[in-house]
Length: 339
Image (tube, rainbow, N blue to C red; front, side, top):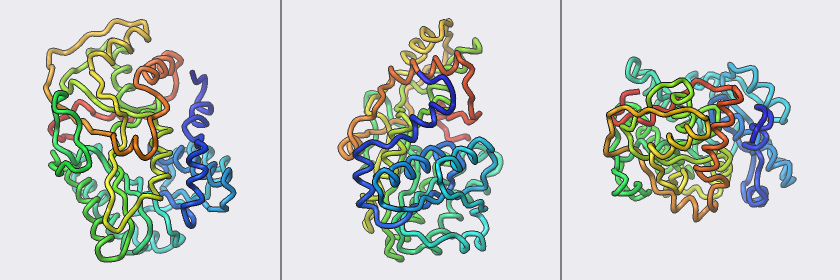
């Protein structure tokens, strides 16, 4: 259990011995674009801790507009080199250090329904500017399982060979981002891995937080999406950094999530028990949702270090202790792409 945010951040950014060993196979410095978001801070600090432990001397650059004072202090204390920049500005992109390894973690999801053009600019326009500037760099590109079609639990999760079939403009722009980096591989000699993530859990946000919050406030839980995948944020960080050794000009694709397909009803019931609260359900039980197969990721990086049941207990304790939340809901129950 985590008694404060410092303990949580330390755990989420702790590299394994395997990642420390992998750092020797990553040639050059690492720059994380969009490092001020949900994933970026603990990802950047893990990269720094792994590089220090490996003794490789790599610099870790974190690039964002940086609006959260807590994030700024967390990165500063870890020795991450922060660069404040607006990545929609081509002049500011050109001023960035020319590094070999880029983790592209910038993206926009919420607000797409009202301002779709902003989402297209962030998710498609910015990647075009970045790939022109950095050309044949080594890219791990954060994407999403939203590029896949919806599946019923009986069908099982989509794997990396499943053809994209995005629903809604957010999913379309996410596929557009992938296509821009594929273009860079084809025309600039870039090495690329498309990192299709759903859903990360770090207790301050995530699908388990979304369900727990409704239970905590005596609000009914929707079963519109009957099942989901999720994965501990520490594992996501480790896979993202390690994926820099798996990129290819042929473009690799990697589903990053937990191997467990978990029932929404069961998760809500277990969270309610751990919270000591009753749970009510809306009469809206659906048949399909966003489900991914994580076999390739597990083969590359092993099993996640926490099961869904373990994360449920951690989430409940975090909620009961009044732990900070980021006010960034997943909207995992959305099946029509309206974000």
